[in-house]
Image (cartoon, rainbow over all chains, first blue to last red; front, side, top):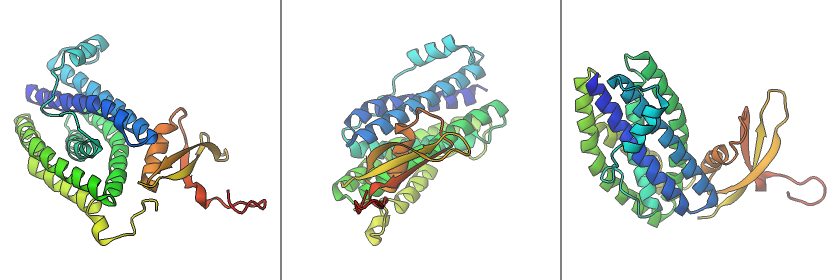
Length: 215
Length: 65
């Protein structure tokens, strides 16, 4: 179980870092509505981090149902500045969501098929919330498609972010295989998923001016 | 980025009419739906909907809402 605990710990740290960055990024969102939505999204990511830390502790026999132990794990968790660097602008916030949040959703889909019933239900609960995160991201990518500067920034940011998250995904996948998880999501799968997301949003505008953005 | 104004309507119990709960501004219908979920989450809604304000038709001589 220690390999699976390693995977859960890695995902928890990534969610922790993402929630932390989004909480600050929300303050620089381009509108008050986007600020509220981004901070709410951060709150949900931090909630997922807490649940994943608790799951990791449960597998390690460290009191995953003990609120005090979970709180201590969160407070002493190593920061992940390299994995989730502070975004410089709104385009980088969107690029981080498009890559890291997509990566984390791929992992939750895998955990939702876990042999552990308690882990399956937790993963599904998080996936249900991720549906709204994806809708929010797709809405913003549609907006970026119509704004060349924002689109260029998001595209460049995603390229940099993918170079960061591909090897991270591959390393986690190796630990997952050691835990007996079949076909865990790889860096290549992340890249193809992000490509499909971009094709359906950012690149759609080039040949189609009928997107539903407000004119 | 041009934002439009949306009216937000909600229903918390089956059988109740939709009631006006607020407004928001958004650049697209998709983002208006996402914003509504997080801006008006003080209640557990059975239904929550948004409509662009320009789609409301005035009926008392004002011409538009």
